[in-house]
Structure formats: C-alpha cells, structure tokens
Image 1: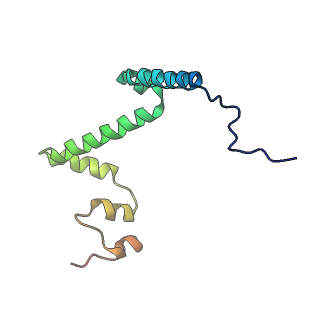
Image 2: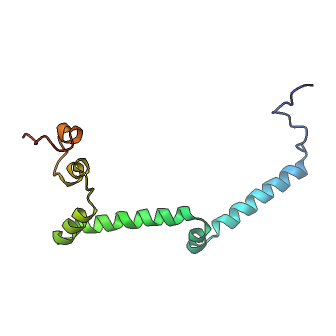
Image 3: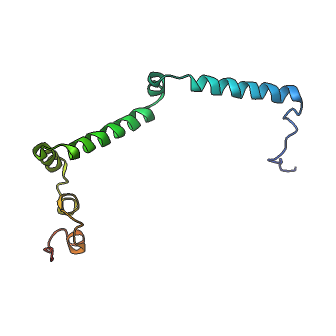
Length: 112
C-alpha cells in the first residue's frame, strides 16, 4: 500500500469556469464583509468587545493623566495597586524600582 501524496491536485478542477466561479465567490464574500456596520462587527464575536474594552480603558487612563485634579487619579491608582510589596514597588515608585526591592520583596531600602 502506498502513502497518499499530500500535494495531489487531481480532484481540483483545472478549467476556467471553476476558477471564475471561485473568484466570484471570493469577491462576493469580500464585498459582503466590507459592508458590515460597527454594530454587526461588535455582535460577531467576543474579540471585538475585548478590543473595545481595552481601548476604553486606555482612553480612561489617558484622560486621568491629563486631568488637572490628581486626587481621583491617585485614589484609583492606590485602589488598583497590587497588595504585594513587589507589585507596589513597581507601580507606586516615581522611577524604576531598585533591583533589591524587586528580588527581596521591598526589604532593601532604595539608595540614591
């Protein structure tokens, strides 16, 4: 018994009518996809909702940074800060945290 050839193309018709029909189906599908509205794009799957959520969060962060009132931004940063010392060293420091603070969990003071 011989193994089937994975590159065998005998079953694919090689005439102009077949390829014209295939091109027509591809063009119709592309035209239909380009006419979709934003609402139908969002209703299609969960990925667009995730993308819109991430984009909305990024815009919210940018607006908070540009806002003149730092009280709300500071409160939200503190509320969403990680509870472990390494996460706090990364998020709440003005500059990059010291290597010792990351490796030893904040047990080493930062030297300037």
